[in-house]
Image (cartoon, rainbow, N blue to C red):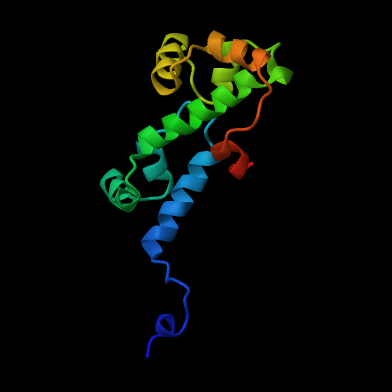
Length: 137
């Protein structure tokens, strides 16, 4: 008899644990502009193809996930009144995005707002941490 049949705790597969480690690794390095799918695979001594295979059950690609996490944190910082004295470029660089033109297009595409609009709306309404950020902090 298998222990997992006796308890209601799902058995975690080693692949799932490695996928968790990959994402945790990325979270600690979001500010590194050199964080890429290739650099993550190399750091974990796996192939890019295997990395994609590990994340496939989660329906995500690592590059898109990194991009989304960076943009969420940039948006959070832009809306933070305590960081109003920082430039948009310095906030973006803090999270690994060095190209201002790319940032502008990415924010508009992801959230429908420019950096200036995000800052303006944070001045007009009381701010609450987005759920995806508040859970991780």
